Length: 123
Image (cartoon, rainbow, N blue to C red):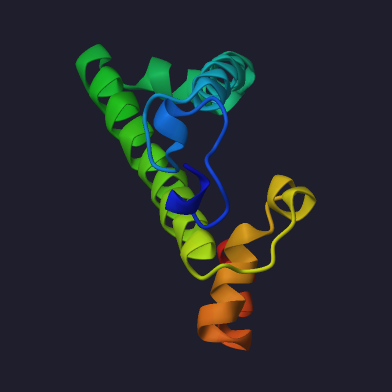
């Protein structure tokens, strides 16, 4: 039902929900991200140098821990700021959202110019 969500249901998500792990587009993004990140690891010399210099047990633990730490930042930012833009009903077009302008829009709306500077500093 369209009245349940502020901007309507999300196509291809479980029951049209904004917050779900059953998303066809999210699964496709995850697969593309994993393949792309594997390419980065195999081509970047710094990964090879650290892997060769470290003990095998330390390297495997370090890479797993590093991956989990890296994942937390984009996941928490995308979830919190994306849902905040929907909750605040900010006038963000699909083109702007596709260009990655949701975080600056939310930060600017909530914190003013300081929010814009913080997002720019984070980048």
